[in-house]
Amino acid sequence: MGSLRPYLEFARLAFQRRATYRLANWTGVAVNFFFLLIHAQVLLGFFRARSDAAGWQPNEAVLYFAASESLLMVIGIFPDYRYNLAERVRTGEIVTDLLRPVTLYGRDLAERLGSALYYLLTRAPAVFGAGWLVYGLLPPLRWELLLFPLSLALAIAVCGALFFLACSSAFWRESASGELSAVVFVNTFLGGVFVPLDFYPEALRWVADVLPFRATLYTPVAIVTGKLTGGALAFGLLHQGVWAVALAGVCSALEARGLRRIAAHGG
Amino acid sequence: MASAGLRSQMQYRGSFAVRSVIDFGVVISDLAPVWVLARFFGHLDGWSFAELALLYGMVASSWGIVEVVLRGFENFSIYLVRGDLDRLLLRPRSLVLQVAALEFEARKLARIAQAVVVLGLALWTLRLGPQSFAWVALGVAGGTLCFGGIVMLGAGMAFVTLGESSELQNILTYGGSAALSYPVSIYGTWFRRAITYGVPLAFVNYFPALAALGRTEAAGWPSYLPWLSPLACLACLCVGLLAFGLGLRRYESTGS
Image (cartoon, rainbow over all chains, first blue to last red; front, top):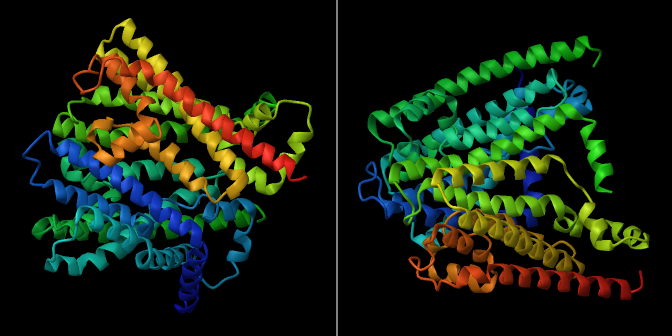
């Protein structure tokens, strides 16, 4: 696979690219904050209806959502519809990519990590800080928080792999926007973006625990909220690790086959 | 103009279908978490899932219609900055109609259809009478006027701010739609007042829905209030039209 340097370079470029959209970043914080306010009040409204809620206190649910909203951009829950692998395949730019000493998947992951670092330093604390100002929310200081960086990194990897899979359909079809959107929808629901998986009906919860989507958001956010401990925590991290490796394998395989197909078609 | 755009889009039938699927997914992914929460907690401030779906269907229909019909106004700042406006002013046709027809997207019709389906399912589940139907229809119509006014106000402001205020417009429209998917009663005092007396968003779907469900007085409002909805929404539209007109006159007078 060669040295790490080109990957670090891609990560750095992705970081810088995000940093240049300064106004968009501030308005993005405003949007995140607005939705945080709305959905926090919705959650609190629901909690008024029932005193016993699967062991969750109202403020814990709001903390969950605040953490979720803060980390959305870090984990990369929403893909860039204009600048992604599928678009590069469609326009033919992919040909220049093949000249570089990096794998497409590796590059994609490096860029995601670079963007993630930018948002981790800016958007995440801004939105989370705003949540703290309004609701006084702070994650409980438990030793499990030490595992959060690992969980976050795995989440970014799994999320990136899912979108890479969606984009790779562009090797065989005209565009991947349908697949990308499908991933977004399924991921927000089964990944627990708005509602912690603890509130899902049992059958759905079982499905959600098997599929990779909870690895993108529910696991890291639940760790921050302090709701994932002991055996459940171990399962969550294991689930993330297994899916990260498995999806990375599938992505590499698809990349190889996709590139062969392009080459065969005179790309 | 709109039909020309429609015809060119229908040519790419494959991607049209794909993009319709995308819009279909939006409605489901909007309602799915609400369904989960409503199932677990039972209700939100006394509103069942079907009633919440009613609120959602109403505001999604109103906003969906405005998104299709007035998309040119929604993205007005882009055309203004690009200088497209001058080209339109030269044509011997109503400027408002021309701007409205810009970027007409057929797939957004699918979004309206889905919102209406949700509305229909909610109404059927709740077994509401014809009077309630009328309230819902009135609410959707009023909501369209209100969102239309906001979008035109945004376009009017674009003459001055050249696109820097578009996020504010998005918060009122997309954010407003999201906020209105739930009963206004759950929000804190200042927010509730802002979207009732400030921007009349509560008149888009909340008050008509209260009337449709026969719960106006139970929610603490005088029974005549829902009747003010069309007036409030019309006022919002008038403000928008005025703002756009003023902005346009200012633009034309600065010699371009």
